[in-house]
Amino acid sequence: MRFSVLAVTLVLWISMAPGVAAQSPDPQQVVDAFELARGAGDIDGALAQLADTAVITIQNQHSSRSFSGAVQLRSYLQTVGTHFQTAMRSRPMVQGSTVTWTERDQYGTQAVDATIVAVVSAGHIVALSYRTSDPVGSPSGPADATSRQAIELPSMAWPAVLAVLGLGLLALVFGRPRRKASRSQLDGRLLVALRRDRACEVRDTERRAA
Image (cartoon, rainbow, N blue to C red):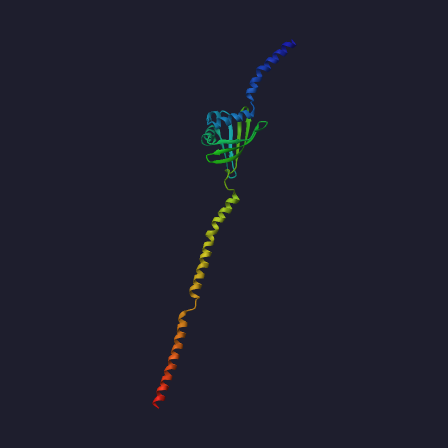
């Protein structure tokens, strides 16, 4: 009797084990299947790894956007999810039902670093979060502000430079001594000399007449 009970229990356990394994696959396997389908452009295959209530969130330093529901999730995969390729990917870290990894994605000519967190429940992804940085090689905020300031400084300095040049030209034109005054002095000396010579001639003439 005891043997029969043990045999039945063993059979039930063996028969139920595959079903339990099918209901609770490894979270990393679910994520890998999603990434493989997404990278291959298989939208239906990627959607099959998402739960009906799944939410995909994309965050960066400036904004955050979420996609949920069958229509939005398909739209995300059609417009964004299948339009980038993963150039590098770190080894996923699994903690319970959460899988975390980092990767560098290529969008055309731009490379973006991202941290991804996926939450898996009952064999499907229920939450997928992308935390992206600025494109690799793009100027950071302070550097960009410095470059803008360097560009704006010449435009602000031009009026001051022009004003200084204008004042210098005015001083050069109106500050020079007039030559007309010097000519009048020369003419006055000439007249004095001519009058002196004329007076001498008159005296000589009178002296001869006498």
